[in-house]
Length: 108
Image (cartoon, rainbow, N blue to C red; front, side):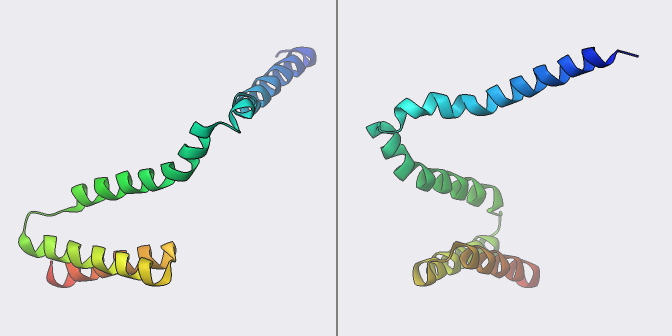
């Protein structure tokens, strides 16, 4: 059984490494806060990530038959329409997903 001083040193080193790894991103980004590139990315990156996720999801979900593609198009239209009308992401996503699952289970 290791003695208490060895365990205390282990805990102290683990805490220091954990703290350092969590503080490092903030320290590295502090000088970049006023950079034009970071400001540009903070505005445009979320939209780009969402677009990539949407395209990936549509490519993987798209079925082989025309009816599956039709239900997918209807669900995407419902999602986009609700989001444009209400501007609430959660409502749009839940309604679109519900629409797609319902159409696929009833007529899929």
